[in-house]
Image (cartoon, rainbow, N blue to C red; front, side):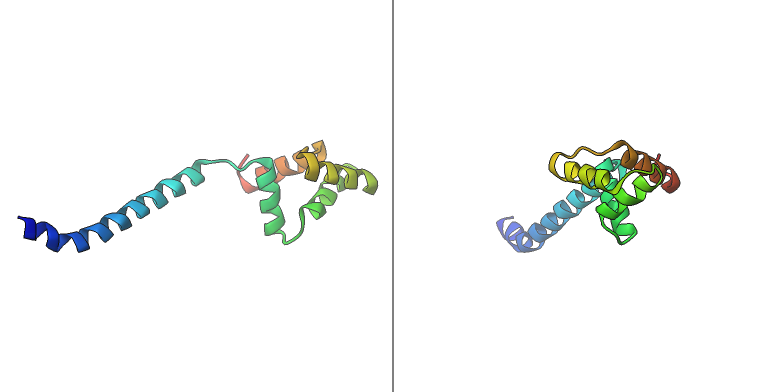
Length: 103
């Protein structure tokens, strides 16, 4: 019986390692499919989709609210430093989520 175990060990060990890694991958994938993106993550996602910066999206969001450029720049600086997202960007994200079928 010892010879049987020794012969199969080089085959079974990599098989179990592969199976373990595959199961971890599947669990992680399922977790990410069920999770909703935060507003910050969704803003970054929109920037990638539209191939622009988050700064550009701040200006696009402010366009609907007729805000000044200096105020937008201050809001963007505050967003970068403190993570505070202004109301007009949250509204922009809410509308974008609705269009995407997420909200």
